[in-house]
Image (cartoon, rainbow over all chains, first blue to last red; front, top):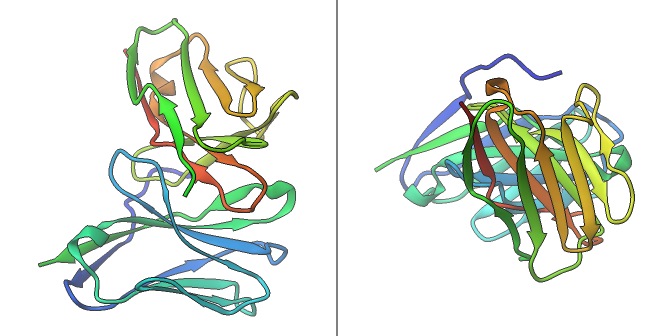
Amino acid sequence: GESVGLHLPTLSVQEGDNSIINCAYSNSASDYFIWYKQESGKGPQFIIDIRSNMDKRQGQRVTVLLNKTVKHLSLQIAATQPGDSAVYFCAERAAGNKLTFGGGTRVLVKP
Amino acid sequence: GAVVSQHPSWVICKSGTSVKIECRSLDFQATTMFWYRQFPKQSLMLMATSNEGSKATYEQGVEKDKFLINHASLTLSTLTVTSAHPEDSSFYICSARQGSPEAFFGQGTRLTVV
């Protein structure tokens, strides 16, 4: 069911530093994972994805790491910029091609 | 990436009325569209999966008679919130997928029921 309203965990990071956002997923059968960025009042925006047969994938300034042993996913953002301030969600795909979203992490970039 | 457009971006309606939200894939044909609901400071919760030409599959706890979904074409799905009440106020988001696992999201619709 729906979770009770909670404050999102927040990661405060200095501009120019690297950010690491973590996500624990629940379904060992999930075969595909995505990181999304959501700015206030907008829909999620695709950042990077990774399939379960990989453990690392790099994009522009972003790297996703997948540890299937402990069911953990992380997103690393290099040289964090003010425009990176947003809420970040991980999502996993299991049966039925449906995406299940994690709880989200708010990233605040301090100038 | 592909573009998914939702309309309207925001809507205010009176309690008891119905509201229709449109989700369009602008530059691709979407075999599957998904509807999500998001409360403030919470994650996206899947409401239903919509396949063109067939009935939507609703998630557990989502009332199909209250949230009517129609996927009339490969580029359009609609969500109608019937007899809306203040507790239906939320951010509704659709996503569309062509065939790849990646789904593209609309910009969301803020529904406020007064």
